[in-house]
Length: 483
Image (cartoon, rainbow, N blue to C red; front, top):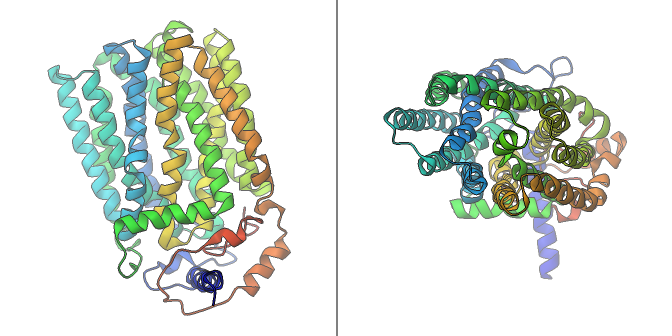
């Protein structure tokens, strides 16, 4: 028997186990994740709303902190490179620890991971507030604070993404993710910037103190999810490093997710190159104050709110992969336009479509992973995805700061437009050939022909290379009309 035939047999067995584990409530899975009745397949249920409540509360605090950090940094320095380091530090943890965070989440109770993450961030926010009150804070401490909060955030975000499919049916994933993203968008992008600017007029510590309060409240709400999300069964002899490698390998072998990941990574690179210098751009080019900057960010966030409302309808009509293509095709025009104008409202209006694109992309790609990736691998595969997609953000922030220092504050906008246009053209082929081209009858036939096996088979990594031409996937729940 050749090595190739042996690998093919192993692939078939692993695909069988993964498909059956998704269609049958196996040990360690919450049976509610598989319960999709005709009249209730879109009801989200109490546990989801408990999760949504904690997301809303933490997002309220995050909105104040994330909006305040660049404004506080601008009080310490106007150097574009130093300002970009604050953004860089907040996003770097996805490169350093993101993949390990996902593997860790797959091994532990996700509710407890979220609880301890929120409690830890509350303590960090209290300590930084004390530093501001006592005059110990500076640009270096602010960068360290952003880095530390980012590390804990990788655990919180990974656990949230992994727990959602175990709280709602697959047909309600777009709706659930839209609600979660809507809460974050409303608080972080829309309400956060103007409120943070107003609070900073009183004292620089107020946004961070309220951030600590928000994390404390969220930690008190999370015990309501106890027992809902239990850890999946571990594979025999598996180590944390091996789990990380499994997640990266699974993602790399899946053509559709790999292509989406690369395109979203370039989108985040482009966006971060602009965001990193946005505050000094607003002050020096657009000529606004701190309060004006906060209001401009709120105008841009209106686009994000629109994106939350549009995500599910667009995904249902176009398919998730083509929705991503559409959003990434609109953003370069917005970047170039914003870099060409000098009026604050024109710049904000030009960037509003970027906010909309970001919201839509976040929602539909999260649902895409939750549908295609087996539940027992979701944490590590999602973190491997974000290692690349979000990991491009710190590189973009550094590049934006360097370009602004070299050629001026308008440079990063045109760089973002050029880089994203090139990536969009490269992604046209793989994403247009994705699952949207498959008919409902094809998908029904795939489900009917899928083999079955013992549902208690230990989870293993599936080689999805055989599915890359059609965008189909052997493991997890196949693509269905619920897109």
